[in-house]
Image (tube, rainbow, N blue to C red; front, top):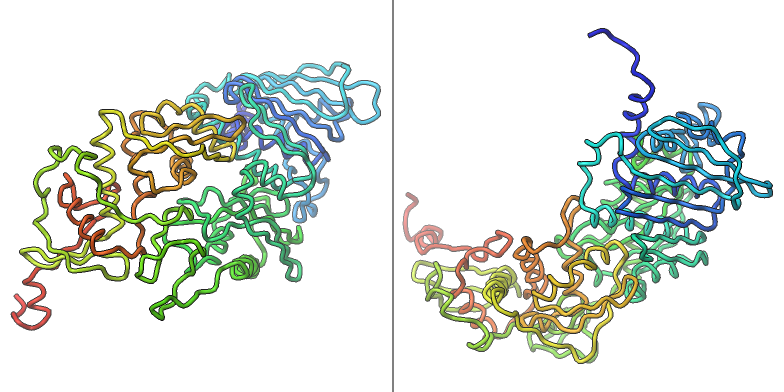
Length: 579
């Protein structure tokens, strides 16, 4: 085949593939254009998860009618004019590809008017083909309608996820920018429902409370540090407020949302020794650096950057976060037995072991209790599972049970073992109505918009699992009852665990994922390492584990126990020669 120049429409679609990955990519490009235009109010409207309609309206500077035709052409921009400016970019957009790329894979209409002009102008772009401009009446600012996204590249359309997943990506994106620019009033309408609303007051704490709820906002530590030409603002969570993944770590550099593993790692290192393994903070970090020290011309999506003095920036960020954490971390107090322990609230009961049994997310004491025989159909379990009868010896490191069997010693991970016990009880009850425990008063749970999207259509599924959850408006839900097996767990924590562990590519909650959902809830509800158990509690857990169908692993596949044979012990003590 001969070498030839690609037709303009094919070249545009290739370029669009680099810029527009999904509906959220369109929203991002249009949001950034509106911010660059000096908008103080941005309204976004989404229909059919962005497939049918994405509309972004702003009250910014607008585009003069004589430049509207040029604005939708490739490599047309007002952000820079010389190559030198490329290395000290102060705006969010600069490539001049966004509108052209979006127009090449959709039916796009741009209506814009500059402040003080008697009328505005409108242009339509369909699959890369533009119409002439027309004069229309319009308020100052720009309104862009993107309809039938990917209508001419159906293969790209097929790669999109479910509507709920695409809406969640859009909600996450708008939430991040609403926190980064609290002086702008953001409004997101998803399928006719208000998903995001901010006041534009300029107070980032107000925006945080509006988007994540007042309870989360109260548990966030403010950050405000400056070292030479490095400045850090924002919020990071206390050690009591954590998540099971890094998805709620948001980092902006010079007003641009970036995904930088190094900066995220610096944040996590600031929590070193303060968080359990596998737990991550919630953080919103806004870093300001001289533009010439940040290279943003790395990726078409502009989400990756290179820093001139990377190590110093990492060090300054880690030091700033660590300082805020240590300023709010409780000082260890001396327990009754003369041992150091983290002091509980004044009204918390003591177990007598020097450390209270804390539930998840500060839910209060959560001791292990053996259920009544009527709670679990015992006939469903074999006599002892596939482990021998064990004789309890005790607990070590407040994390492991030590037991003796006929063939040696068994070390049992109390957290993994309790996970397995709770999981099998849940699964046994699943066929019938799962017993629920009603709360004395309904507990209000405020979720971020993107997490609310996961719950909204799954209330029936939650009901089948023993949760009674009611939509209270916006992103607020009321928890009226929880499964009886989880009665010791905070209702807020029980609901949040259902949404916080989903990865980027996971589908929404569905009935066929019920076992996986139950496993996640059990993981949160199970006794944690570091919780001292009484002799009776240890014995009850050991007996319940023996009755399980699969006692040797937790629902996630981790071992619940380690076996040390008598033969190995004899060889270690020199009673028997090595074989």
